[in-house]
Amino acid sequence: MVYGIVTGFRNFLYNSEILKSKEFPFPVICVGNITVGGTGKTPHTEYITDLLNKEFKVAVLSRGYKRKSKGFKIADPGSSYTETGDEPLQIARKFRNVIVAVDNRRVNGINEIIKRYPDTSVIILDDAYQHRRVTPGFTILLSDYDRLFIHDHMLPYGNLRENARNMDRADIILITKCPENLSPIDRRIIVKDVNKSAYQNLFFTTIKYNDPLPVFGKQIPFPDLISESDKNTKGAVLVTGIVNPDPLYQYLKRSFKELIQLTFADHHPYTEYDVNNILTARLKLKTPDKYVITTEKDCVRLLEFTNIAEPLKSTFYYIPLGIDFLNDDKKEFDNLIVNYVRKNKRNNRIS
Image (cartoon, rainbow, N blue to C red; front, side):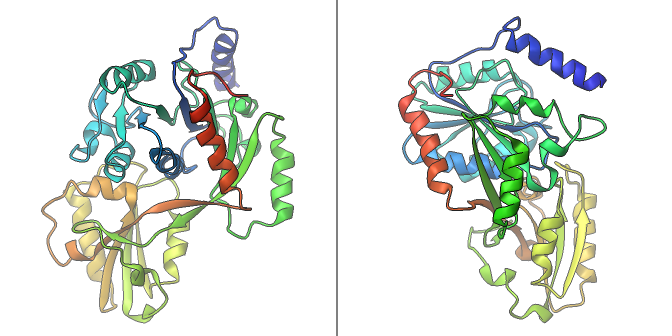
């Protein structure tokens, strides 16, 4: 109740314009959630970045969660995750021609991007749904299928950062991490429970696991690693520092005779001690073909260890994540995003 009163009063001050929000003269897209972690913001931000990058000069602005630096900072492929945070650095390494910046003060961050890169066409705000100091022109709210915000409770009893009624600030609601075979009945139940407004669009997405890539070395996909062929000869150690590693564990389980799981906290800063534990776990595998597999976000943090020796180094892979839209909704979603950027010279809410 106390948490709800505080966040509710804060939203009231912004909604009543007692506290002011800043608008900017070009498209600003917010991607965020109202729950604590684990909704797939980064792969969805990357999807939108890739979509817009084909036609526009794109910038991504994040707060740089758990970074050790202060103020405004550009994330480039040569940065350390301690300077920028792991997720912004992941995006910067994947999209070399996209501006990726971090700043706890989003208004200042946008102003700096404008000043340094005046040809910027659109800014994507990563994890900024609660950042009311900026009024985005287009807002995308994410909710995990297994933890729907409409059935959740406020912190600390549940996982909600603010009341579920505040979904009304969103132009698009994405139900993420859905099963690929989501039935029409389940879809209709969720649509009814969410009870969106007429101006809002609701889409369903699922996580797509792409072919493994080496953590160290050239970016050569290794699709045969995640296949049921030769399963009896393969074993792996799964290393994760994310909110919910179980879906990835279940995905890999069908491809390996042995699968040892090493689970760390979300955004865990790996140490030499952790690397030694990974090597020890790998040695415990009884299969002749031994691998270590991690997530793309963990890969960013593990790359700091340039002295990892063989055979661990050459058998260390990560699984890149992507998203797929269910029910053939991809084209409609893409058109909403691209048309917003094309048509809105000023940052006015399209709804």
